[in-house]
Length: 161
Length: 204
Image (cartoon, rainbow over all chains, first blue to last red; front, side, top):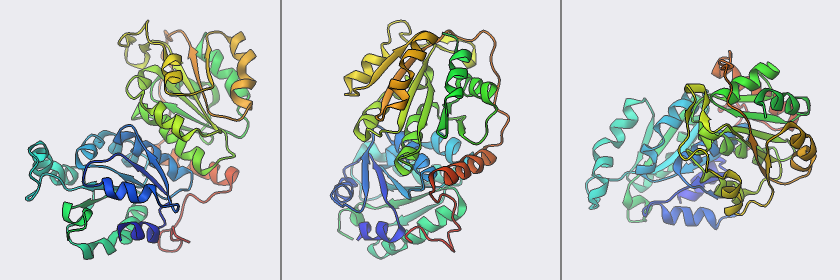
């Protein structure tokens, strides 16, 4: 269902680095001929590749875990904010109620606050029906010429919502 | 090799291709050499991202030569980019590593492990087949066609001396740079970059 919304958005290129929640989506994209999937060495490389793809006329998505997104703040604010280059990002909403992994506590405490602090818009997808808003979020990202993030809950990503 | 002479040689042979430069003396020297604002994107931030940035362009515009000039201060921040480059193996992407072994723009502090770093060996170790090492203008003249004119992704180490006199910054607004560079690619590669999202949806 998420994949179909990517197609609906017109996305052709997906750069990814997994966490365990998002791995099934990466697998689905990898097996789907409608996308060029590029595994990257670190999340910042996805920011660089997708930002360059903008100048290649390729609608793209950077797919990563919450921790990876927090490592990209400098790249996002310097590349995408300074030059007004749109960047569409999917990330995991880690560390919230229901996530038992202690190493994601910092994401639960700070991720959305961090995004707010740099005025980075995000769409929370905690219910299946919100998936349908992905094309609108993508269009908003393009219209603003800025980055935009979609944060997914575990239940949505693993098909339990 | 003197970076200024090196860039003069490249600029004279650039043709229709585009150039991406990393922050610091690489950007400043390319600007001083060419005064170009259309065929070049001076990525004045996130130094280690420029080859990925160039790869994104090269994917979308496969007939457009894309030259990336990255300082070694940028390279050491993200050498893993070479694994992605090798995976992509884009024939129109040429990655040039400007190796002066120091952080030249910020006072010439030396890089970690500066003298021993073998950048070409790192590239070969990830499977990049066409790796070149150039330390003189004569060497550049001799190898240029092999590196640039023949199709295929290449990684080339340009060993240069640190500049004593810093070239200074690039006097262009970031957003102006975006549009001038993007419009150039639209014209030369025949691709659409700038759209009105309400009138020209991505999926059409």
